[in-house]
Length: 211
Image (cartoon, rainbow, N blue to C red):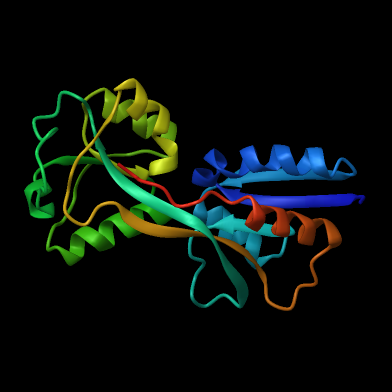
């Protein structure tokens, strides 16, 4: 097989898809791959203008005429610095966090939207200490003791293993979202795009424990 594949993936997906991409490229050496990593807002703009072959993201906007196929679970977890007084407490009520400072992604982020929707449903208005544009910066900020954060479980595996961050046991968490493979409805996928989509679903991560 020969061809070119253009992928656009959400920033959080960069912890999952590139690992699968290595196996795909080894199995399909004739396919050249270009991958763009961007936030939700820019990804939706690229999707609306059909700039790429496939888009891997959370839930696209409801008003977009697209094909949206479930790919994998994306559990969101609540993390704290190891020194936080709530570490080790069990089954915390979300209302217990109403006065805790939070480190949030930028407005429009899918993770932020899901987080705010969950807490609003619990009658909690989040107290925002900082807005940060990258998961890496959020992790460092939380580890430094500036607040709590909700992040995709895939982004904090190393930090949890090293003890730099700790999960808080809060009722309702993890919040389960889904990754999707998305493309405009009616678009005829290239052989390279079809091959990658098949590979992705065949080798996708299987659900596992999030704690």
